[in-house]
Length: 337
Figure (spheres, helix red, strand yellow):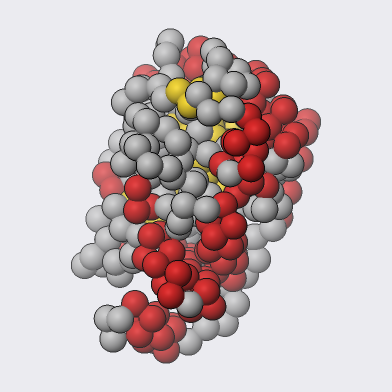
């Protein structure tokens, strides 16, 4: 069966019978994993393989948010801990080359962790440029507070992931840095004028527009579209994300079960797809919501299908690496050797 235009979550550590039947019938394009789905290496490998068996696609993408710091689904004792993005920014401020090297190497090591257990996509890097007074939801996840610095470090993170055989997802396009609320809980509105947005928030993403995938921000930019958040705004996606920023890859929504969006789940999915998202992301693993989203997700075809295929085609086999030596080098850069 052809893949459909959504990415789903699951409830627990193994496929339940109703989830297996759902995956076979609904054929989501991909799966995203959270801590509730993770116990140890062997269990994750089984879950990933069972998902791919159920959808009938050996290369179906499996995604995770593995940033480091506060956002790290794979964690000790089974996986290493990684620093938040701000650590790379601090190194960059002391020495640009060192900061960039550390960012690339950290991402390369994360990719090794992921590839070993069958995870092929990491929702990283962030290109959000935070400002004073913004909500702490981004905070130390950001690489810095200027677009040039953020883009430079994000580019190295994306390069490190790709070198390890993992596709990067650029987030949260066109920028979450000015949001004064956490979109997990309410809809933020950014009232900044467009010229300022273009030269700061959007500029960081513009430098990274060639990456294979990006995730939208559930934020209203009132100077451009005073009503709809970027995820469901035709204007924001056409004029800004595809237009001014020039992003040409696969565009996925952020999680449509977040409280920033309103209305029934089916309506949210329908609005995101109509606005120009190629696929919608639903994360919480609630089977009734998964079914509602699946009911709105068409088979991936046309331009969206071409972008999806093009994104997956960019994945390459991991480049050779001496992992033990790389981990020692990374510990040295972090000052933990």
